[in-house]
Length: 167
Image 1 (cartoon, rainbow, N blue to C red):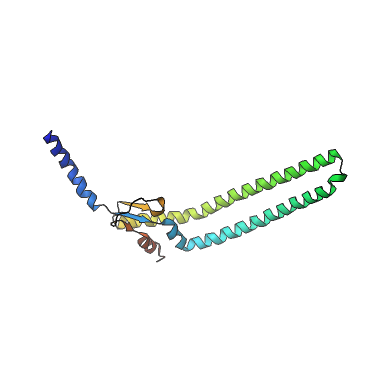
Image 2 (spheres, rainbow, N blue to C red):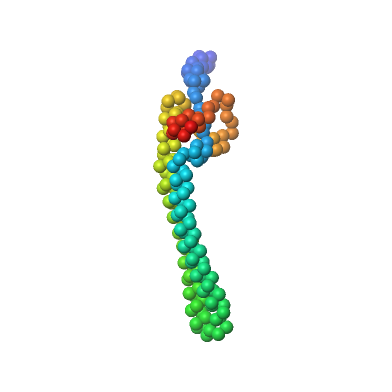
């Protein structure tokens, strides 16, 4: 039994010594990404894209409201059959409005993600480069809810900013 304990300790000792040499870093990637010059260009592109879509949706909503108002004025003088056809037309226009709203929202999300992907990739490469240059064992996202952070952990944001040239 004593021999097993000694063998176990002999096996663990190198791991314990190695653990002391491990460097861990953390970074708030959102904070660093917001400082990257590409992000302001993306924000402008998205603002223009969303402004166009907002105008389209406002025009569509006005058309729907105008047709509803006209229907409300005429409703009392319409026959049952005509009233039913107009109500179905209004329901169809409302469905198209909702579909357009959902489609434009999805397009906006997809466009934003496609524009941000190269920036995220650039940031990831910079983090990897800093990690390799500085011999970090691991780098954590600080906004991911780290429950404990040792005083030995290093905030690598300044190093990544320098790597990206935004310091």
